[in-house]
Image (cartoon, rainbow, N blue to C red):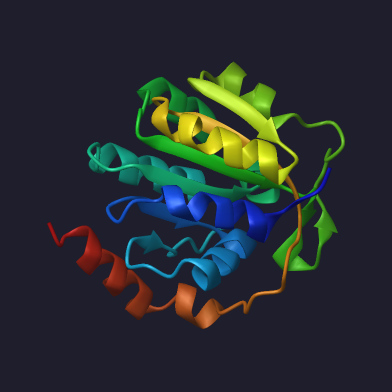
Length: 190
């Protein structure tokens, strides 16, 4: 079966509450911003591989909010140690959605090393995540999302995806002071 990234993100949108923090990186970020623009979208992730670490910090600092990380396989491979730190801290409000398409999509679609061998679900479990599951079709993902987001984290959901529609890659916005200020204002609103 085939799971399009934008369809997976659309399935997630109804489960994201107003106070939830969404940390998105690279192509997942561009797709998410087009599909679900909101003040608590944290997009100031300038270094590849840092989505999990930034989400981890936000989850620790905001234990009363759900933190959803929209990561990519190429990005996570650059920061695998974060899995152990996240699991060790047992952040129950941390939900890690990993888009696996075996390429560095926004950087020229170069292949990810070991793409046919790496198993992120097993890695998350071995690191100590409370739960890990994989999805390769929309129906299974949509049916599982309520339970995944109800179960204490950290949780890893591996999304075996193909690209969906092409959304604008607005690097100027995601690296802007405006994006950071918008998020900071929303975060401190309560």
